Length: 377
Ligand code: NAD
Image 1: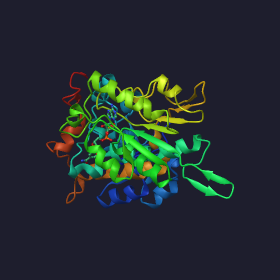
Image 2: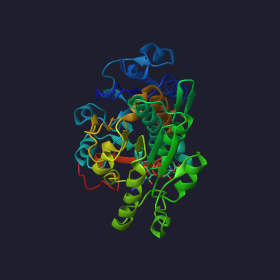
Image 3: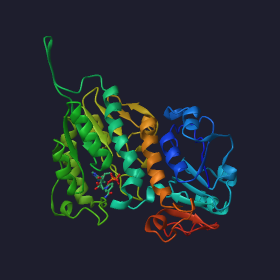
């Protein structure tokens, strides 16, 4: 069983699909590990660290791989070089990318989309959405504080008192709750909002105040899977009025709101941005999915006429690449472990396992996932 950890081909991707720790664990399960030169550099891991853990370093190693551990979906050109039947584990970004799924099917690989992992207790250790969103939430506060020309905590000094910054977090899922916790640790006065009623208690348990229109629709606004439902136009108007009034008093706004399989909801209008004080900072963590903030630009920091900055960093977990890679690699290891037979030390994929079925996009030349099966190879 030959497992390859390639260097990511996307120049903006600093993360890597394996670490010396996961290399050691996979070797213990009977695998031969091959790492491409420089694969870990963006995450602070040098080739000799991988070698010390038992891997071989070799360029262009994917052609003979039985398993490829990647961060991002392989490009069409890349996947053509993979062996038919190889298992490929990555974040596949499948929605709207049906042509790329067809290319993976054509190459004959079994491609697993890690972001489709069911959010059940057994799979928590494999949940890349949570491991990466948690870091994005933390990093959003650090980025906001770096862009903000003031201190976050209240300071009483001989030269005068500095007030605590007011930070408003919109969307209190995994990223938002970590942003709340981080902003609290840094001494800010924190408020947060979400459309899921369960999030109120979670926000309050972290010492922040919950701000939302809590009518009957709000009380029903969670799917059985624990995700947000799209809200009615009437609810959105009421909530927008409350948010508009609240935002004018904030120094920093961090938006994290997503709805699975849809564009991100628009929560902050240009008028709301214009109502904020000069020097305020907005971080839009949803910018890659269409953005929560009007005027946010992917990959850019936009300063509006009244001196409010809108930050649209891409791949925010990648801005903490070493930590992000170490958690991501553990997520991949935990999933791959269920595909390795411990007695024969060979690959043995449990094709009927619910985690395999939920994440498998392509197999034997076909797009097999029920959500994408139309993308014929
Ligand atoms: P997400 O990334 O899909 O969305 C982020 C947040 O935005 C969510 O809290 C969502 O409710 C919120 N949102 C959507 N529309 C909004 C709007 N119009 N205004 C304000 N907020 C809005 O969500 P997530 O972070 O992946 O988490 C979703 C849920 O799943 C949470 O309850 C989380 O605790 C839960 N979860 C469970 C497990 C598990 O293993 N059981 C693991 C991870 C997450």
